Length: 125
Length: 157
Image (tube, rainbow over all chains, first blue to last red; front, side, top):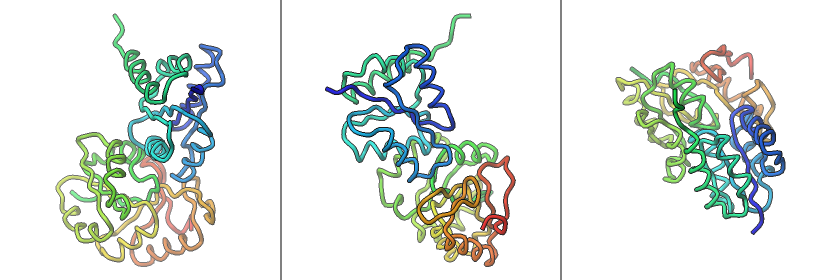
């Protein structure tokens, strides 16, 4: 199985900043690609996604459940095999993802939801 | 209340609409007028995902919207009406004289279109259609978010 690639799709520069943060924490810099919706209509965002995803299986991480990033990503996944989409991207799910990329997109999506949700907590006072 | 915002936005339902405009207007329903979306359950599910449960989403074709517009205008709640392109806006305004304004919120780059504003790209034909719409008595302005200035049609077409 080829290693999954991750694409982060966000408003403004959130995705870029997340890629930089993952690199700073892990030193891994070839697993994630950032896509911004800045200045994009539906057609252009689809084009940016197509360029970023390229060939092979991929996992798309979207910032919000709803909105142009999600609708474009979900549409893209519907038209292409071996693509899964999760929303509510956070750093914790990305850190888990970059170390677990020899799995199917469906499995990676389940992991992402799990790792992402576990990171959301109220800290002890 | 009424439909407080008639908006042309090729992204249809997204953050700027739901949060940017929806919050300050206190919108309780969104009418999405699009012939394609109104005939696809899959597309409707997709757009509904971006809307919090307390906001109702109504999907309508142009014909259905023209017929229902008076009802929505008389609704006691505040609503937002969305179309995805200029042709749909023109078609709706032609069939429904209740349409008094259109906010151009996002029409993005595509072959043949030229940049008019950071968030508005139009072909010459589309620019002419907007001017015509305005000449027919519809107030046409461009404004992406409520905190920005509403730019009159004459300044960007």
